[in-house]
Amino acid sequence: MVKITYLEFDGTEHVVDVPVGLTVMEGARDNGVKGIEADCGGACACSTCHVYVDESWVEKLPAKDPMEEDMLDFAFEPDQRLSRLTCQIKVTPALEGLVVRMPEKQI
Image (cartoon, rainbow, N blue to C red; front, side):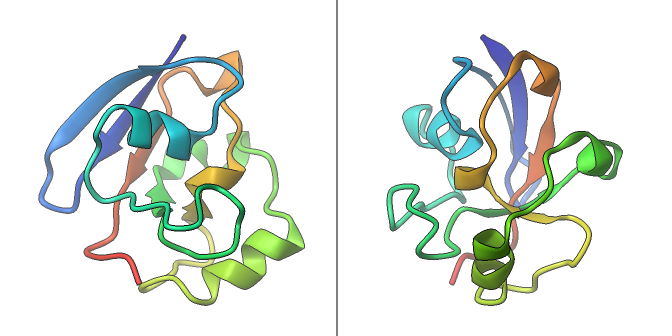
């Protein structure tokens, strides 16, 4: 299990243990974290699992692939550096302590 902190837009904090092998999106969905809708179920076909990764984690995550980059264009107020789709971040032991912040809304 890997501890991930999800911060809702209003500041509500959810510290969740997520099994290795799931995605950050699945960790939120399976634990009832509000703010990550995941309408496409993790197929990278929408942007409703958009988050802002904590600045300290940007360089530690795998690079965005072109499909994720394209889908982020449809996200609410994307940030070139901090925005990620949680369905595209696979949970590994290296993500212990990851912090993500939800946007005001998902589109």
